[in-house]
Length: 403
Image (cartoon, rainbow, N blue to C red; front, side):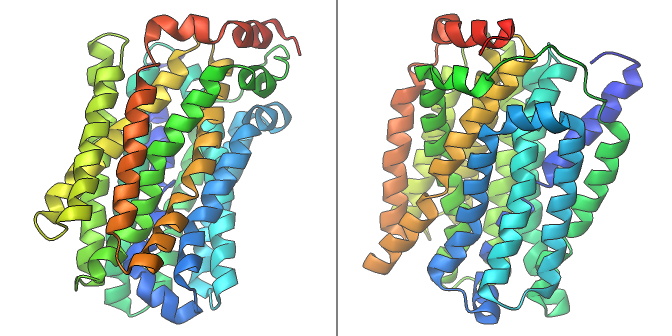
């Protein structure tokens, strides 16, 4: 990042605060699921929609990331998105029906989608040589925000007797982030027109591989944040105790997201061994949920969280590493998230259907283990020596300003 060293630190603060706001609106749902169901009349499939709708928005809007950046500029778009997150969360103070609850999920998900589409490109622009570690910080805070939502919402509900407060009070985080972003994020730099970035990238099979991989991995995350707490409540756990499971998982996610990209950066450009490590941890955690959920639940959530968090952060780094220029790098990251989140929107509904068929959650966790096995195979294709060959025509189209 250019400029005074102090500006580097203030931007890192913005990275942390913005990342912290991107998951509490989802992770706060699971521990309060029964109270939300009683208060709004949501069915089990309706609860799954509270994740499905935001994930679909994250997917669709990610494809529009380059267009939003051209039309609005990255800085104003991110600030406006943080205002949407704040508003959507605040409106949960007043929810009284199923569809208004889904509406708040859509509004907040819209804001999160815009941030996720544009912010990695800003990070690549401001820290071109340290994008990996800074993305690790961003991912860690994103996932740490998940821990905050999972733990704070049931505590606030128990203290106040209102699940509305448990959800709506998280709007304070969004308000703070919007103020910080307005003060800290540098103005956009002028660029020559870059052509149709998304169309160029969609012509490359590597983009589809990254979307598939990201979707398979994040399907595990969406399934867990919706159904892990209810699965343990079905075994007799309280809302706050099951929320603690999600909080521990999210803390482990954040730790892995923070440290694994830095470790991988120091040990060369090939991140595949680290990706396989994270996938192995996920597989072990889901196996525990499926086969012996009461044996060592906190160990299982720790392994799952470590695997999900590390894999999420490393996936973003791998996408950015395909290009040195921040525009195509950010566009590829947004595209990977777009297709990936569209895929990741479906697993909570699949787990819900399997639960209705079998009466338990084991079948859903076993299904997720199968998805991880497919992801293990896809990682074999992500050798860094193949990055240039994977994106040659897309890179030329983007950087030459062609269409």
